[in-house]
Image (cartoon, rainbow, N blue to C red):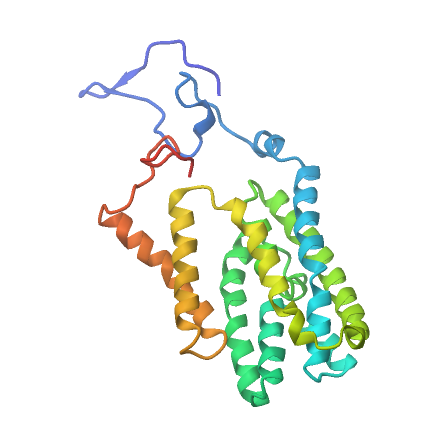
Length: 283
């Protein structure tokens, strides 16, 4: 938009000044410099080129995908056959639910109870899908296939992207890389489980959650985000001994409305208009 050099035009008997109302067309990066700029996708995309999105997606996909080996070993040690183990990774494809299922079976739990716990843990993916469906806006024919890749890792890579193009690239590369590697390493782990002896002594069921938490931690940049994540961990661990598998993780989501409530009551620093909170940290 060209900078206005002529005096503002007065209209009507009241002498109101005709001026362009503030709105989403103002580029926040230009705020404070006396000019307004209408950002387009090319401007924002320059901040996050396709190569950078692919690099981030590959990093997450490879790091988490390799932990499928731990699931293969754990599942085989729990008494599942090679076919059952591989079918879980191919058809279920949500690591936490898979570990919950085989863990319950290894502890001698009822198969239906184990499946129910895994189901409750996997419900979170449905909530991810509600947000990602709007953000990605895939063609209708692609959505059933994309839905199979709606998991923690693809959501974590997709949501921070600045444009729809970057979000689609991040989702697709993360999903494809993770799906291929997770299933390949599941097969290798199931085949090699016999060579490891007592699989329970290795604690491999904690490998996948640990990797994901290590990848998630650097994304918690503000004090509000860190407090929300910490409260969610406390809720999950506190409820773990008293509730069925999968339910504590779902209830840990209550950490977000609790923090929002405290912010509304003025008991937590609220973000300011320049993108920082009262502590001076970026949102």
